[in-house]
Image (cartoon, rainbow, N blue to C red):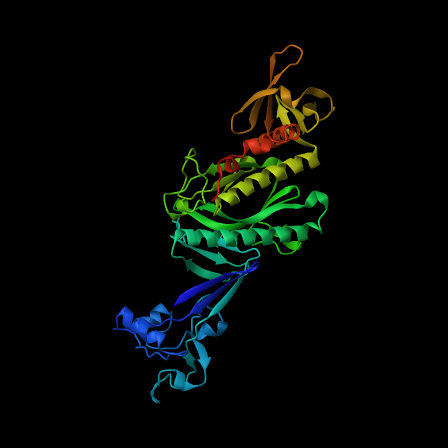
Length: 433
């Protein structure tokens, strides 16, 4: 059979044309036969004992399992077994056979399948592995309907279709975000959202990936198992983190030497990062208490978009928040440490509210920490030009350090609009056809 793909703005349609070869004949004879067979072809096939196991049917019976009436089916080829009251469409059964009075079934091929691209996801990997499919990928709709594996003749053809479908999915996602933002306040806008693969650690230390849907909205970073389609869904996220306390980090810009490299779907640089697995386009989101989430995307362009979106979302949240205050301690005293977008760093007594010290962002010359609770901040005194060391202890040191990083980056970006672009790893090395 041959597959015909038709891509519109919102739907991928798959049409199927059946081509049946006659067993025992050579190729030219089969082609000649089919060209002269007319519009309809009747084929007689021999029943094989291996067929039931392949079709997941009871051995020795051409009928399906009793629960087949549920309506589940394969996307391109319906499990093929539909109730048909006409016994002439099935192999005859002996009157004495126990299945003689059971419903008969006939095979039916699914000629056309339409897959909505809104919130759909694409996968190029073989199931359960880090291996890319050669000139092939799969598209899965929001409701779980799959196109099956779409195999192409050349790497370029596969790349063209992949790029076209990815672009349509991105455009539809953007339209959906704009509609959602009309119902949200200016401080609660959706900046970006989309599918990624999250790496999970198996019990046998093997690396497993699972599809996740990420969103940057308002003050938070969301992780979903399925995309939010209603207002209530936003409260059902698996994880929610404050954007001021997360750190985006690109782990890998690397791709093995295969057809995708020829298709220019990678970022053209040498590998400078640790190879933690065999997947390219990986990034982490570091969160509080030293935890992190490790993600992978399908295309280098997606990695660049996520990097830019995180930078923008964090920048906007820092500006909206203005300041963040954390409880800390030093030598038995309970203190408050404030990071302020306008004033810099301030430390004051939690009881008396007396300010103990204050420094601007530009006065911070370095820092070090023990990886647990304690941090040393090195400030330069503007009057004496000497370095002063301030030591503090926090319950969640990681969140505080991420917050300091976010405020400093936002401060520099507000002074130099080109700062974020100059810091972009993905976009700096990215190129296209």
